[in-house]
Amino acid sequence: MEKNFVNFNKVGIIGCGFVGAASAFSLMQSGLFREMVLIDSDQARAEGEALDISHGIPFAKPMEIYAGNYDDLKDAGLIIITAGANQKPGETRLDLVKKNIAIFKSIIPEIVKRDFKGILLIVANPVDILTSVALKLSGYAPNRVFGSGTVLDTARLKYNLGQHLNVDSRSVHAFIIGEHGDSEIAAWSCANVSGIKLDKFCEMRGHFNHQEATQRIAEEVKNSAYEIIARKKATYYGIAMSVKRICEAIVRDEKSILPISALMNGEYGISGVALSLPAIVTSDGVETHVPLQLNEQEVAALKKSADTLKKILEENKI
Image 1: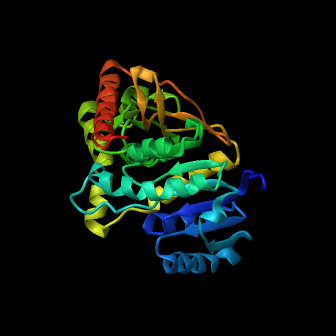
Image 2 (image 1 turned 90 degrees about the vertical axis):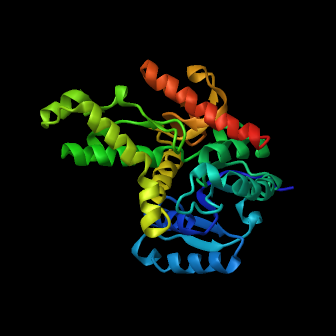
């Protein structure tokens, strides 16, 4: 039997809906990969997306994009799972649990059968729950299975703070942690702008009502997806860019610190559940969590977020 190897020039995407297709388009533009396999329960949809995206290759870097099956994934360095029911107006991410757990029970065993050796990146929602599900169903080491977590939420926070302060959002350093969802936490105690504490920088820019501003911005970030879904029925561009950023960290072995959703192992007294904290991301996956100096209120909120996720896992016997 031929021994499988990890080929980081090759990526597979399972699920060719809005998020999967947008992620595939973003990755095609990135030049990170030489080969991309698209898989969907609707084979014609996967074929159509592969053909459409392939027509942009003359403006990017040479690569092969095609609709395939699970056998085509066995030597991929990275599999991205976006497959799942869409969040509808009025639904929370946690409302999707039962439908998407059932979908994962059909996907993960097929990957395992192929003796896949690479990294599983979970993007489908609720991402923290489904990361825990993927870990259990696959039996893979925790460093190899993680979710996109609050990478997008953190980008939204940085964008909103940049707008509030009229400064480049890339100079804003702040994290959303916990659940990618309604119990997420803005870690304000650690936030800064190019090394200057957030409160001081706000005052430099003429903003003095810190509590009102931080509460408003945190709510705007938390409700971003609901606002977008109410207007255009889905969100996909922001998460596609987040997927590209995570893939860069993996493929280039960047050792970047990103707030991905990974299994907790005693950090802040939390274990046995996947949620988002900053972590060092390498070509081996999650190297280690990076401890933030959170205040007591933030730690309590993080534990509450973990308890919310644990309850869902227990209710679904995960």
